[in-house]
Image (cartoon, rainbow, N blue to C red; front, side, top):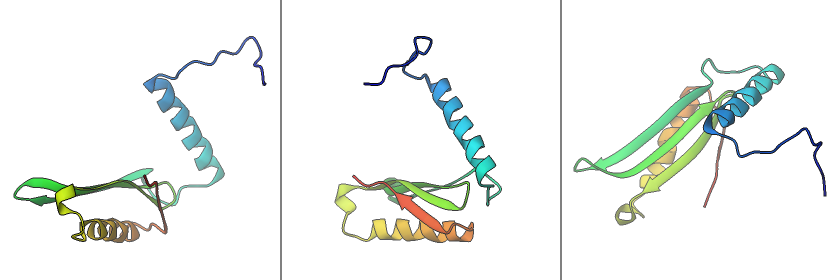
Amino acid sequence: MITLDSTFTILEATAEESEFIRDEIVQFNIQQVPLTQKEILVHKNYVVKENNKIIAGITAKIYMWGILFIDILFIAESHRKKHLGTYLLNKVEEEARKEGATLAHLDTF
């Protein structure tokens, strides 16, 4: 088992502390590998509506080096198997390419 020096304490991070950690690593990463895009984050979020009701949607972002991260893809159960997911993924990928993205990744569940 690893023990910490008695002057260190481990605590659950607050939202502000979590933001500080994220900002610090972003700045470090930028120093190591310069950005290839003007804005650190470019959001690409789309919805599909039917009769003014959201039936599908995707949230994604292009970050730092032209990397697309697809965060959420949702299709209402009643509208699955209708190619809406394929359409939304293609839309986000096409828009990301226009912004100069060359890589995409996502998490699955």
